[in-house]
Each structure stands twice: as structure tokens, then as C-alpha cells.
Image 1 (cartoon, one colour):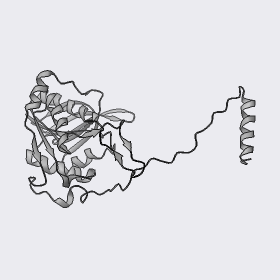
Image 2 (cartoon, helix red, strand yellow; image 1 turned 90 degrees about the vertical axis):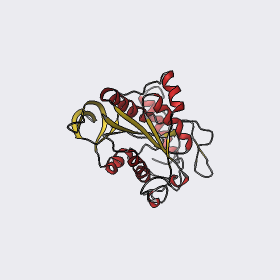
Image 3 (tube, helix red, strand yellow; image 1 turned 30 degrees about the horizontal axis):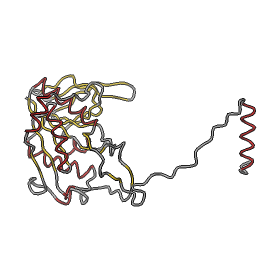
Image 4 (tube, helix red, strand yellow; image 1 turned 45 degrees about the vertical axis):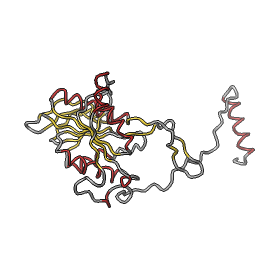
Length: 266
């Protein structure tokens, strides 16, 4: 039976996030959070593999304690175990330190045959986590997975279709394998009442900087981040354009020439 891991993230509703014009910081207070929608596609693919081949499905996230709600959402639709990496020292992490923290915690949960991720998060949209996790897990990788055709645990391989610019290709990779998943064939499912009730009672394992074996504090949070964002600000937009429509091409061109002449452009 397969041992499956799904990496998920709780994100703010980006449509409701605003920016403080004075500080340039994002104002997240009072903004509702949700499970990264693209991670739900990865979760659905993982649940289908568990249902087809059997095994255990663990979901893991890094974030504040409130991110447990995302894990319970995943438990409600088919995950069997959940874990959260949390604590102030993990704050301010970029993808480099986040991937390190996730893998160090996941190593304490066992070895995984399949690791699933959404292709990116809607709040950062870097698309870097999948590749970084694959490298840290020492796993092969299939990006843009459209459809999983076969998983052969005994012979240690997976066959899947992946999206390409001009269509799709079928690839074979060795296990363990990390997949970033497209939504076409793996749309997130809605939990039933039984799943919701069970998820509320489920235990969630908590990892902090104090109970992860071999954790290097210089590699987590801001100290371990290779990129630092000092400020976020809206771009300076140019003056809006003007549509010239005088009823005919000749009149529109004449109007344009007059406007250019007034500005000294001709």
C-alpha cells in the first residue's frame, strides 16, 4: 500500500487583501482565509490514488495555528493523518526555508512513495515549492500532471500524463515521485457530513522548532530565506489612454494629428 503526502497551504482571500499606502504592507487583518485552491486539485489526485491502491494519506502544512482548519478540510475529504509546522521562528519564510521546514517535519512521519502539491499558491504564485520539495525529498518529479495512469509500487514506478505547451506527454518516473497537479481531472470534492464530523475529532500532529529532529534554526524563517521582500507597493500607472472615434478614419486621423500638435509632439 502506498504512503502518500500532500503539501497544502492556507492563504488569504486575495480578492479581499488590501495594501496600506503608508507602509506598503499587505493588510491581512480581518481578511478570511481559505485552502489554496490549487492544492485541492493535488489533494483530490492523492485521495483517488489512496482509494485505488490503498494506503495512508497524510496532509502537512506550515503556518499559524489557525491553519489547522485547512488540515481538517483535507481530513474531511479523505486524508487519514494531518500535521502542522508552526511557531514564530518559522515566520517570514520564503520558499527555500519553507521547503526545508516541511521536509524536516515530514521525515519524522516516515518515507513517502508519492508527494503531491498544487502547481502554485494564489498568494505568492512563484511555482517554486514543488521543485524544491522534490529535491529535498530526493524524489523524481512530474510537473503539470494531468492524469495518473498507473502506479506500480512493486516495481517502483508511476506513469502519468503531463501538460505541455503544445499538448500532453506521457512520462514514466521512479518512486518516490512528487507531482504538481493540474485541475482538469482532479477537481476538489465536497466533503460529506460523515467526513466533516470525523475531521472535527481528528488529532493533528504539531511540529515546532523544539521537536523536529536535526532542525537547523539558521535554515528556517527569515534567517533561512534566500529572498527578502523589503517592501510591496502598487505600480505607478500612466495616464489612461483615450479612444478616438470621430465617425470615420479621416476624421479620427485629423483629430489625432490635432491632439499631437497641441502637445508639441509634431
